[in-house]
Amino acid sequence: MAFVLRNVEILAAEGSRVSAVELLSLLCKEPDVPGDIRSGAERLQSELAAALPGDAFDAAWHNGKIRDFDAVIGELLDGDPA
Image (cartoon, rainbow, N blue to C red):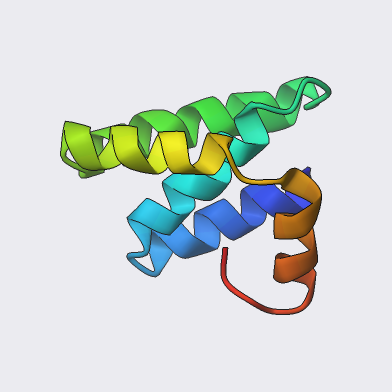
């Protein structure tokens, strides 16, 4: 889970905010996210929501929620951006 959160941070820092929100949404839908990771995710969610127009944030959040967690992790491990 920390790996996913770190990738969200990297995407956001690189200016890929929509991709960061999609990945963050995917992480947040998982039921077993440890408390410290969830806290970091909530902080990033607030930051990204403030950095994007509402409709862009909402669309990215929706797109992330419908993706398959294991498939995305595989893409990240292969070096493909989320």
